[in-house]
Length: 310
Length: 251
Image 1: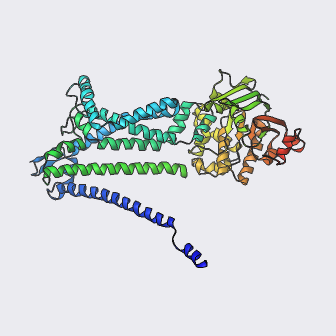
Image 2: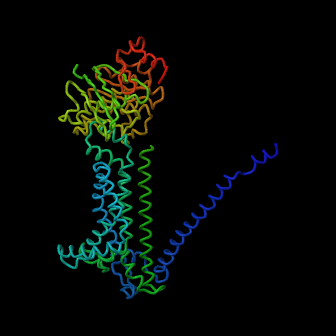
């Protein structure tokens, strides 16, 4: 009797087995995901640096060169793969769409959390969430049939260009930015709001001086999430931007972003050639930018958290 | 002495159920009035009626009158924010904004439109002095108020309320989240400032009520059972229920 009790206490219980079983399964899944990320990074990197190692293209020529023509030879005897026009266009489109989307998103979020009653806020929320589910080709098509002619009729020219791209992207990132902003505003503790009202602040003063101030790191994160999405969006942008690889001089002439050039070009080049490798280099730039945005989000999130804990 | 706050036959309904059954009380300037009673007796609900904080909740109906200096604070002509500037509130959980100590205290004056740096500096200093925390924080006004200890945070909150220059200060169990030493400091702060204000204090702590209040109101199940001078109430209560509660027979 005594022995069996001792055995029972010394041998691992059923729960211990379940625990280690669960640990094995989850570590296995995590390993697969890590392997996936590492191999994507590795693949894009090896492909992307071929342009610089095999074809001996200077990295600075690539990043700052203005002419993109991988199949012809330039003045220095090397193919022209200047990606600067696409990098500039990508940033411009992203910044403009985020700049338009941010005030709309904040206004929607404030309306949903402070002004609308429950039903109105639910209606608005589901409308905005519906926007997420629409495939990007539909956005591109709507942009093509509505936004491009509108820009054309106002500013002349073809209508294709950065402005049309930014407007389409604005609608596409609005739901992301809005719902993250709502989350950030809702996470402002109720006792700060009560304290503000208790000191005689009006609703607007409370929103402006307390709620927005405290949720600022969260709102910034939301905007950067939106920018990440705008930077990476390919199809819809490709349909409205005009796909002309020139350094943009204004917002209403055709241009091309990194992503739109990738989608346009990748099917028309042969694996292993410079034309193909140069596209992979563009992909590498995109990847680094996403990484950069992600790090930015982490830093802002940490700063915001430090404010509460200090 | 024009800072008298009084309620007459105050009833409050959550939906259709009546939570406060007609409470009439009068609070005088220069006194601390303690509201005591077991949990759920309605004392905090009653307190929140006094500066219209219950307006923030849905589905609350209030009848009866609450008058500050003879003016009905629920009349449609009164602005809520003006009332809350006159009747300040300190909450149970210390809740300074996650801003600097200076910005916390200057919040009230700033929303009232004070912009002059000199005036703000002076308001911040006198308010912190009145709340007996100036000596502890004067070298560090730029420090985030959230980094202070709980007791210091609560005194910053009192200073923040004083900075609006209210007539009445409502305190909802201001020391229940604090350790005994911090509680004593907050209590002595209240004793120091009471001559200039009309202070109404909800407390669970009967010793606290007997230590610092001039008058005490005992509430039970949404009714006012007894209201009298604190000394009389604790030594010789009129009502048997009051005596039972004060002697710890229930609650």
